[in-house]
Structure formats: structure tokens, C-alpha cells
Length: 306
Image (cartoon, rainbow, N blue to C red; front, side, top):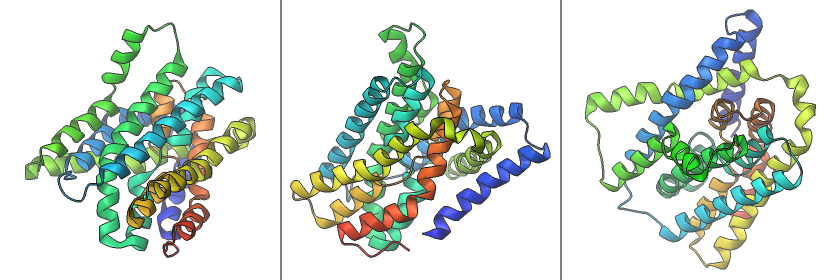
């Protein structure tokens, strides 16, 4: 598990060093954010979802229940942010941090190590539904928090035309068609998609000001608790109550227990969210990912991830 978490922190630290050395400025880091959110991440979603076949091994109850829980958490977290009186730039970021997980880069390696190829296959197929939903909800809550007098029609158009939503939805459509891209297209998309995670981490490291994290420690604590404890806990009890197979329960809980997605940071910044809270949520939940995965793995009766 340490091997999955440590590289992310090392690249993040590299971003901070590059900023300190002047190789990444505030302007270039902001440009890197825009490039990641509008080009690299949509390509990653299109390739990851579009090449995951939905026809075999797909558990509709698992996908439906995990999706339901993510939607409920998104709504409750957004309402809680409003009731707590958080500033507008923090409301959408708070909600996103509470439900949007780092599935491919954190949950998948843990599931493969503890549940094998069958578990990974089930996780990938479930994520083909979860990832578009998470990205759609992220754009919705960030757009709602942004405000600015937009009507529902303009809000809907802003969500529908968001590059992340377009990439995820197109990927889901192509997945239903059992799409296999031509070799040259696959390689092109992969080159761009492989840029997404390191670029997001470098930009986060360059823009993260650790000394300012104390300013957001209240919402940060609540968002981290929601993401790593409440969401997977609700998943465990719901999936068990529905008598789903043990593999479905284990996969569902580990997916829901994944830390806040690295991709949430550039998207939040691009859409006017609080960069301090967005970066801190990624940093803290990723740091706590190891004990969280071990805890939920024990609760679900799987071997400790490693």
C-alpha cells in the first residue's frame, strides 16, 4: 500500500520544489491546471471508461447502490456546507472532497492485491458507471457554489458541455458499444491521458501553501471524515443489508473508501473553488488512505491491503 501512496506524495513534493526553484511559477501552475482539467483528464476518462466492457461481469446492484450512496453524500455534503455557512468557494469543494474518490490510482491497486483479478474486473466495471457520475456531480456542485446569477438552463448547459462530463459520457457510450479504438488512436489518447495524474500532482504541489491549511482545518476534517469513514461505512451496511455477494460488498466498500481524487484539485481551481481546501483534501485523505483501506479491509473480511 505504501508503494501506491508514496509516489503521489513524491511528485507533489517535486511540484513544491519546482515552485521554490522558480521552474514553476504561479502563472505556469495555473496554466497546467487548465490543461489538465480541459484536455488530459477528459482523455483519461474517455480511454479508461470507453475500453471497459460492460457486457461481462457487471453487477448492476453494486453499481446502482454505490452510485446512490455517492449521490446522497454529494447532496448532504453540499447542504451541510451551506448550513455551516462556508464561503461559496468552499461549498462545492467541500462536497466534492466528500464523495469523489481516487478510484483508478488508489482503490484499484488495493483491490487487485487483496481480491485478485476478479475483484479488479468487478471494480473496473462498477467504476465505468461511478466515474462519470462522480465527474458530473463534481461539476454540478462546483457550478452551483460558483453562483453568479446563472439560471437553471445556463447551469445545465455549463454542466453538459464541461470537458470532464463530455469525456466520461462519451466513454460510457463507447463502452456500451464494446469499443476498441484503432491502435494509433489508442496510443494518442494514452499519451495525453498519462499526462493527467502527474500534471495534477505537480500543479497541486506548486500551488499548495501548507501554512494556510489551518484556515480550512474545520471543513477539511469534516470532508475527510465523510470520505474515509461515513461513505464506506454506509456502503458496508447497505450492501450487507441487501445480501449482495461478499465480493460485491468488498469491492464496493473499498471503492467508496478511496481518498479524494487528485483530479478534483485542478477542476476545483478551474471552476473558482477554494484551492486551499481542494489541495488539503487531496493531501490529507491520501495520507490517511493506508489506515482507511486496512480498516475497511478488515471490516469486510479481506486480507490487509499490501
